[in-house]
Length: 457
Ligand code: LGS
Image (cartoon, rainbow, N blue to C red):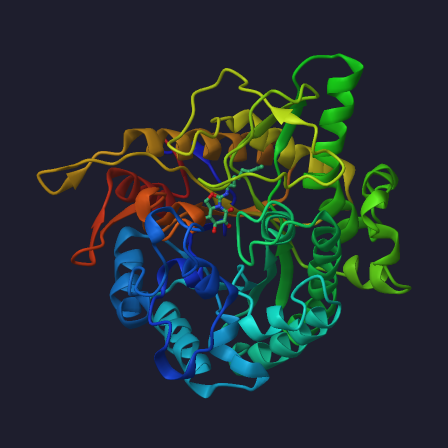
């Protein structure tokens, strides 16, 4: 019986991204991305793992879509690989054909496609030309958006421009934990602005006709470790860079003044040009929210860090490199991230209250746990509880008036977890990488049931 029903038409989805599942990195004219280069550089990914084969989704997509459909999932958020579609800057029909086939297969199965244009796999030649710190990359992204809109717009109506621009900018260019692995706060702040500019240039292109578009930043609940002035300031800085920088830009068309001040030592003010903020704050149809955890923030520099890769060394926080992250006393997942569904409610109600109204989606939420296969079954009750608690938080937020339109569990299946390689499993579906066998975990069957009945018991 359903006692906590969701609004009619709520999208119940699962999510993945191209580099994390596709494999076939040399097939049908695909070019090289910064993640190919990074993963093949010793010491960047745990155990030297890479996405060359991954989940072999490029050849197994039909089987994967059939499994999604059999579970009862109604929506699928995947990403398009830019180097498959425009290797070397020219259109590659072979790459577009793959996504046409994928979209057709989804539509035939009654699953609505939601496509993300950028989930971290920048074409290597664009990195060689300066990457996201170079303004020109944003214009190349707009060209790519036009190609994608033209080729897939008859099938795909829901678009996300950039996934987690915070990660691309600050893990990619400041801490070096993600590709391209650079350690320069000056480059990172430039990258952050140009990722947002890329969104601002691409959104109108994707919204032409009946297209609907938005961005998908990763937002965190943030609290100070104590009410000391120093801790409060540390929390302001982290909340500023993680949340308000992106929310203010996208939904108000301006950067928060205090964050601009924090970033001034890194040359941020010279990066923004006239007209940029109007583009970045231009109309969108929805905002995606990726939510995983809470940061509890201290100004004591001897506290911990939040692990973003097994090799983390430099800080991803320009203007807040003195800040540390302390344990807030909640249970943690296999990533060491604290489980805090209340933080999701806090973020959703905050966005709805403090910003101009825009429909929201949870574009990612989920957890890694160590799964054990017993007689071919995986009873992942911790993952199931994590998702159930976060869905309850969504239900509460909707009751409080938040215009939440859908939820995408991260992830449909276990996959390549960036710097952590294949060791961390976020999937509702288990993947045996030796055989590529997919086995739905208990959480997958449960989530399918919730999707079908449009509500929690
Ligand atoms: O697989 C990624 C998931 C897993 O956890 C996905 O590709 C990303 O879009 C997303 O970043 N994902 C994710 N996020 C949690 C990030 C926690 C990092 C904490 C570091 C903060 C300093």
